[in-house]
Image 1 (tube, helix red, strand yellow):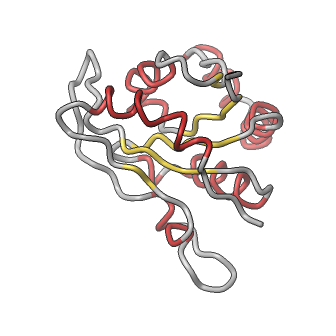
Image 2 (image 1 turned 180 degrees about the horizontal axis):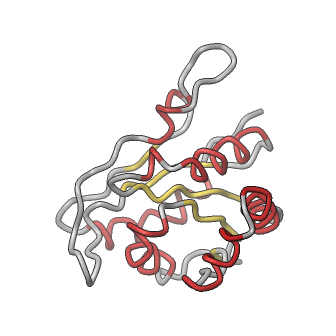
Image 3 (image 1 turned 30 degrees about the vertical axis):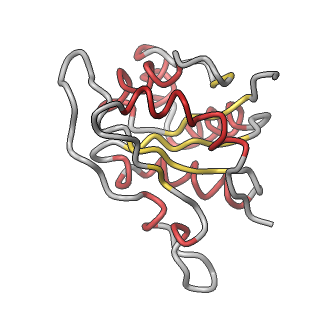
Length: 159
């Protein structure tokens, strides 16, 4: 089966090492990781530069995966990416990654569901429609590896 191109949304500072592990699973064609220096250059360009970077990198992706660490739900650019994906009808879902071990900091506390923070026009929270999977605590990497492709193939989208 051909690898589907996906866009990973996450809190860079806290979770980049965990995210690299998810990317290395290899079942999907994820967006190319941006290195810290390139990301700093994008951020120095201001809000419009960040939006352009997100818009360009999300443009041809077939699914958006929000990788949820301890503070992901509070990040404004993650919220932007979630809203953009939903409004454009891209399949989207989340995966809690707090039990993936970062080589520098180990595991982290489970963050809040970022889809709970998005209120739709009808007053419903986006979490009513979009799942956020919580992999097995004793084998988070293995659980994600076994299930990731299926999650992508069954991800909900706005109709």
